[in-house]
Image 1: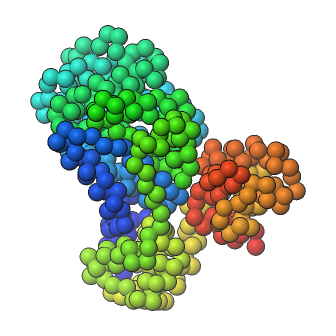
Image 2: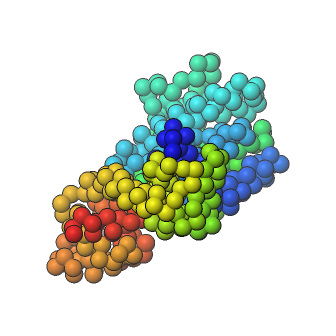
Length: 392
């Protein structure tokens, strides 16, 4: 069929044409928006899951809804390479800057002017290069969010922004992708700021997405984090939802799926949203149409896997050192399930202590995570099978 009209959209963070199976999380942000409109508060949201389940897409959707409701919004992405607390704070300031500038045009006054002054003091402190500027005359707040202490400054900024938002019957949303990679001091400060705002019944929220280890990371940063957020595990799509993700876009283009072809693609994709888009895209391009047949699905399975191996999996495999690849290979014997660190060491003929650096580095690179004490698992579904294919 015509590739120009291919309705599937594989890619990092790209919204699929049919965003299915995430109604619960979308409803959660809508509840926060409506509560803010009547002067009530709630909990921030935490989305955790493996790579490829659509956390970034969902986070973008939630942030877009908050922006559409005239919330003060900043969306940032943390990085495991230690881009550093200062860089994250600069990214946070730049996101807030864009949002605040847009809201200035709506004639906000009152506490909004105070919030702008506090924000200017914060932005000057974290970004002395001056890249965050307003283009309007606003005084820098003296003695507010300008100490250089991340805990103090983020809390004061959060409170002043939230008071301005509450006056307008909206909220403040800080959306953080790859939240498990936020440095410990900044993460602790952000949680403290959200906690303080909550105690004062002010609408300041952290909405984060990250790996399955994120809830544990938050609890380690602040013990009360487990009570501060509404936690959502984002996983693969059940078969009816996976079918909807494939069928709905095709119908919009006048095409359809043979039931057997549909079942085959859902099976090989494992219900993971990114894989569904990748295999669906290939199936569309090889099909003569208007029906995608079992033969088309078989060809898509072969070429889709080759495409994933060359890109999605290979890019992660390529980030590992030879010693780290040995560790990943030893994990593959568990077929993608949770591995015992001691058993991985035994397979490698090494004491667990000797493998600590490789394990820590793989966690830092986001290639594996620790679901429980003494356990390790891939962050990417299908990684074990990919590694097995490389060693056959």
